[in-house]
Length: 259
Image 1 (cartoon, helix red, strand yellow):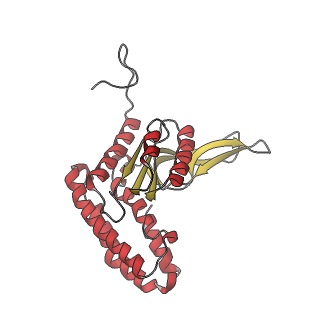
Image 2 (image 1 turned 45 degrees about the vertical axis):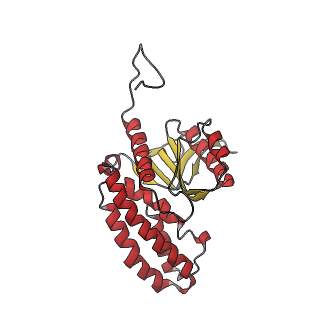
């Protein structure tokens, strides 16, 4: 669940660039205190809670970036990008639907459909995503060995920045997941936008993505607390609407509820 922690500790275990002790010290001095402070915040309290959280997150992000620059840690190693992925865990690990065990947090092996193999047995298609809230179930298909399926309620692709190539890949991946689980929601959470506005405007006509959230005005800017709060509310609303599905009442409007 804590992909940033795992990234740091993998580097410690492998003595990445000879930085074992420095990474261990960074984890103890910076990472663990940051996470403890953020996870103690009651996010249901609204924007004030997010102002407090983003202040802590931004301080850590700056220290993380300084450390990466100082010790020449390559971006391909995902030392910094996994931090953005992990933020969603801080926000949602304590929501009721997860605390009561009905839903869980995942990032690997998400259900994306089934296919018939050459021997006419059924194969389950799975995809990895950056963050997913879903439900794990065990199923038996045509007397084959039981398999575990992770059915997504919400899937989120997280990017340090978004360019046109990444955007195309995200839309394709999200379309696959939503085709397999029609009532799931798909989102993008990014640091900053590096894509022409025309691509975003075109996406509004496409039902593949439910929403996209940009946390920074530009590269190097701090995380915006209001945007992070909007992201939290959107995901919470998606989970709530899944659990408490609205009953269709006639006569009346069928698709969009009146205000």
